[in-house]
Image 1 (cartoon, helix red, strand yellow):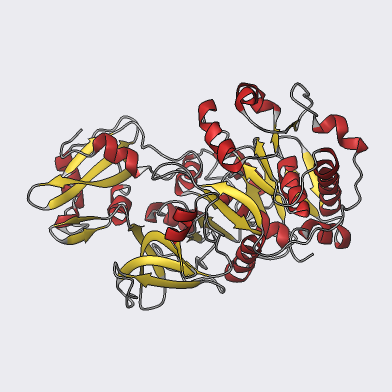
Image 2 (cartoon, helix red, strand yellow):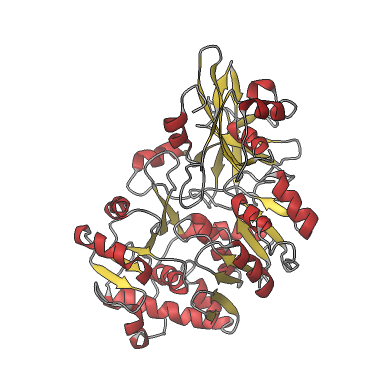
Length: 507
């Protein structure tokens, strides 16, 4: 079996190596123990729930060890795991159940009330609680000791068979179910190991929610693939993360810039021993120079800026570049930058980033038109604008849909946002284009200020005058309590900003 049984191989050959630490549940599992648990769950799925190849298994739970085990157990059968976003309101879940049509629904006790509200309207055959609770169906703890720990019969699994359906975070509207195949997940791991220099025995903290790609594919699955260890927590907490880095001798770690800023602002940061860290990776949003320099100067750690997306990778670049670049492409990734007519852009020019390789998804679940639009002749069109410098390093300029044209000149909000967030009074920033009679469109800065601060548009203009071309400086500004963000990746939802603040005014 080429795909689907990493844990069985490691469990047999390195049974005593630590694989997974579940901090909230105080569990420490070796590869041998994890493999046995996966076998038990696979038997349960197969014999009790009659799950077979291609069936979908939905799960609604916080990060926990049996969530990971469920993924690998479903993979042994060729079934498809469908992680659900626990931050959604009850009515929002119906879309996902209608789209994915899961045969079984696993959940934890923390989400029992949500499941009870959903159950009357769902067409799901099996409900399984991962805790001791049997109101809707069997509970795993009550059956656990009855389940055999020997391997289930092998199922023929190919590279293009679906393994996960991860729903996009909805920055532009309704989520789409991205089909992650066995081959895609494996090749992302290969790129991660070769491009980033992952090592056997590397250790990370799994804090990213398992309903989006970073939770699985930045470090979690690559480290399992390479006999590393994942230290699992429910959610990101800066103090806890700093403590675990020191206590668990963490070697590699991923977070979004907001999280790194929270770590810096923690009272524990100054004294925290981060000497076990080989490198840090930032993604999901542009990395600021201030955060980069803080980790470099105060902790002696190089913070790498990465780039990826649910549909590709997500570990697409070596993250070996200069500040404000994501480096060179990973070893098994083909890239091109193209203009609006589909012509390749020369070095130094800006164009849409398109990607080809075995680490691409198989498209969108039940959405052939969206799949055909994104995947053209083997190339995935990211919708992101990028630039390649003379050294071959790539930098992400911004979203193609975010770009606006002012006086015939392309304006990329992402580069303006980086500078705005360097203002000492600004906590976070987003820039949108709004109508202008003279220029067609001009910029509008949507800002969240640090507590107790105030800022006028005139002050902002003075700050920006020597930092960017005059035509890039936003003409309007609105102060907000918070920016609308996706619940998974915390990306700013520009379509909401444009709907609420898309007028040429300071409101």
